[in-house]
Image 1 (cartoon, rainbow, N blue to C red):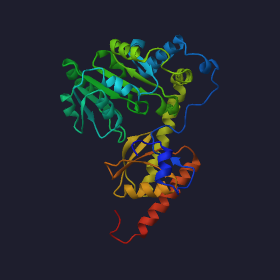
Image 2: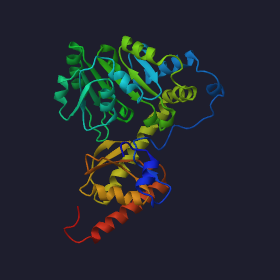
Image 3: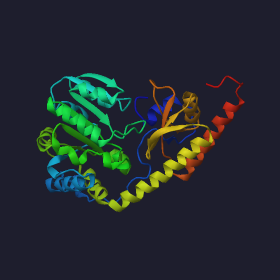
Image 4: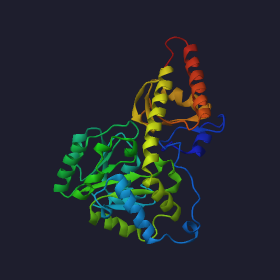
Length: 341
């Protein structure tokens, strides 16, 4: 499974699973921004340019960008990835990993020679450097001053630093580069759907210097963001009270999830308050046992000892997870000594 969130693939992998699935394979907030009645015009009229400008203005304030000229909206950050990678001529692209695989794929589409590196200092040798901050899946955070120093070195040679802040809504915002987007040689990506739990709307933003924003906006042309996404983006991004309360709720839920995994001997090695990064010698067994119980975690083919777990969305889902973990732990205890992986 290349990505989390595919129930079709989950059914193929666990055809006899208890249904419905409890999908913990994504980092999407299970407690979405409250739904509301959309104006009919958002569906049967083309989006008004003024409404798009209103969205950009609110996103500027919420994310802390220097000005509206430094923000462009898109139908999800996924569609931005190859366009951003194409902002500079094909060269050497380095991705700080392990991380979200789509960045490397997008850089390859843009014609770059792509490699993943684990040492932050190695990014200085790139033409295009990509950092996910906080990182998916382990929650690693790179400090703002280190990112700015890297950006300055890249900018001096015509390079570009891309910082994907998809999870910065629940991260240490003092390390965001949103306020530095106008310095040149920096593109910051912000995702709407994850924190607000509305991934299906497909809304995201790129923050950069005014000329780069203009180039990206020109590629999209008019009406790039759908009317319903505009309406939800405007209301949710302006609702600071909901955002602050949700951050507290997510912190409580992630602490509860840590305690639950800890009870059954599964170490939590990192993550954010939207997902937890698990390390276990029996990660494959845990993934399979929970999958058979209809609980889907995120596993990684190239890292067999780690898993990522999102947050249950209801008390029933919490209870199902607890019960499945208890069954898994009991089976492990029943194995002959020395047979546990």
